[in-house]
Length: 384
Image (tube, rainbow, N blue to C red; front, side):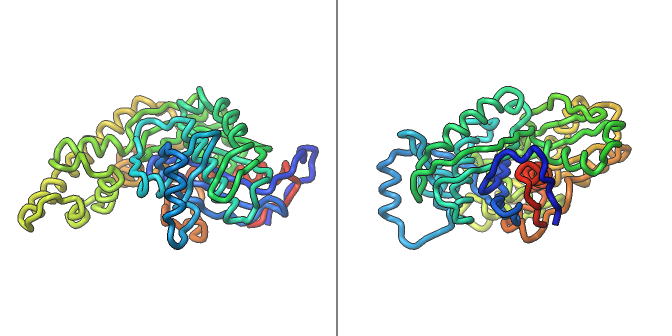
């Protein structure tokens, strides 16, 4: 257990804390109770879809529900007169599809409201409480939109409708960092004062984009972002195959990931469109060939951008993100002359209840540093 100081920083109280990462493959949050010390963390994981819907559609959905499911799979919110279905409900009931274009901060607000409702359901907080929130945004949006994001989030939290009731939540503490910032903060704690003598580069390669965050002797510069995430890999795959453009992107990515570095054929059977066995084998063979080409082309695109973006003189090169791990062997080989580090601290199995593995690296690292700051401000202990 880490003890918190009772310093002059202790200026407020909060019932719970929440750390958010708005990934392209899933929305990942880490929630915890704060009213009697920093409690044990738990994972909130939702599909990334957000779909505007009518009140009538939500009423029809509620009237037709038989049985129950988890809050993550039955989430909708209303801000003012506008209703939104989120996650699995948006995807399965309202046929929403996630756009891999860069995140819009307005959707980040809605996803945070949804996670706050899930958090309340899990911790039995009711509909009126104080909360502390940390969030990770892409570097471009962190630079231009973080203040609007915080202002809009605070306003929306103060009055929004959920499946339970009308919520009035008070945002008492907010922290925002660019993607890769959680991993950087963790390594800064690890290095302590020696960070002021080093150049660190954090390369985050995810579902939607790739970004680089550079800390030069402790000073973090403006992050650089590209759209060279896993979506570029999918674009090449679709270009080289027939009949896959109508397939959900997440389904294609799942097959490519499961195929592994050797590109096994079995994962592509679920994407085959032909009716005959012979046709299916031909479809799969074509997809295996397309995947090998897509991996090669994408790796060349990604590393060209990294070579231009990374600082030429660097002491540590830290990789994180699910797509980076897809090319872990190749990236480690390509940058073998660097001191290459992967991710931050090991993810506790008790937290990774959705088997996300390394995709939790940034949000978990952010949580580790956020809880220490929050514990000090609240004057409470951090329970491991």
